[in-house]
Image 1 (spheres, one colour):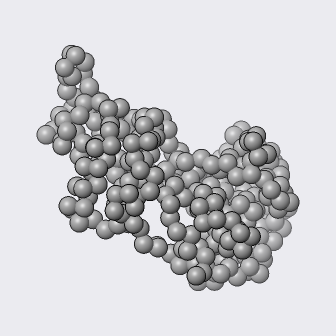
Image 2 (cartoon, rainbow, N blue to C red):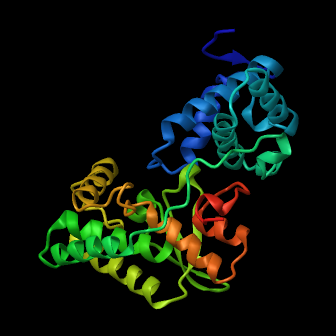
Length: 293
């Protein structure tokens, strides 16, 4: 069924369900997410399924049965578990945006979907990582603007185990019942999280972020130079880190600090759930993609 708009029973012209869905996540989603295009398409797929299967007119009328129907549809299409998990992440983004997050189970296992580990634990070459951090610090002291940004981002990743994009976008401090925390932004699916500042390296990292933001003239308190877009900043960070020897093959890529963070937390006795929540995983996934068995 193809249409630009339709009239509801009350005489009100309704936009297509997929258009409504995209408008909602546009209001409630971090525009910087590297998975944005995939989420957009997955959101449209879900909305189109609900529209065609149930003739729904208003996306705010979503119910658990619509999610369950979509899950069954994906299984009938014989999609692999990884693809289904990605699509369910888009569904969660949408239902959270419309204020109905409770209609989707938190764990994909409730739908008979379990994602296999997409990565293996990495034991960081910490001396190489520290060497790259020192080069960035030296270049930052020489007022190289890209190096200043990359230096601050690297310290955040090292101290908090952030994703590369999160390390560029996170700068805000908030008060929580447990103390001052860094509000992490730019996560997959747009889910912000607050990480309590609990040690000297974390305190030092947020101080560096504040200093770099001010030095670069950022009007947003972030460490991205005002003359650069997020995409330009992300690419510049990735390129510079690789040029300095930070690659996956050298066990020193930008993602390795997440593995180190998980491994340290595990050694300190944190639970699996606490580790994965700290790293920003919305599903109850196993931490053994980060921690050697």
